[in-house]
Length: 243
Image (cartoon, rainbow, N blue to C red; front, top):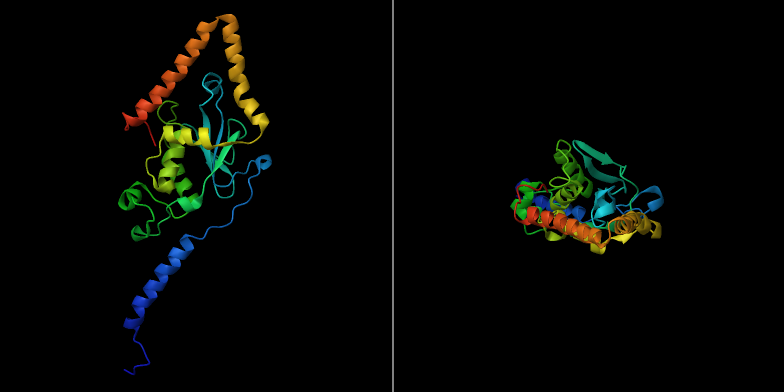
């Protein structure tokens, strides 16, 4: 064969390398996101939080959470066999945290993992896009029974973040998801702060007026017991709490 011509056998490895390189380039290119728009309830690639009736009146650090798709619509596990899409169900978003898609792992195949968890990530259920991860979690939770103590909206959120392997971690659970929103989340506006804490303050004032300071001690004990349960259930009874 003349030296200036190559056979198909010679071209095949080069073609495969170009294909792999093209996939890797596509994988790290993301569609630009729209601006966060609270008025239209659009929070692209955000974790979102709103007060949970009754529960947040007694323990304001607990609420109802969801995750937003790339178009900004919220998705949340809101009840047994029930996933809310583009409707936050329990009220408008009060707090949000936008995540960076570049900190996610979107492997096209087993060799394309950018995280250190490779096989574990694939076995758990990886995704090729942000919305694909959310949809996989929706399918996983749409037949689950809701239980505020063992399988709730925080469980759904942790499942999504584990599928994304966000921040290179697959150890997302109710506790660190809640802490992430609690300490790094941004309030939508001042009215959201008022809406989130005014019921709790009213309960505290009414309780002290009717019962006295022992009510405050009882409320604190309730919050600590609730927090202790989630910590114990998450780290000591891992098979009991869903994520």
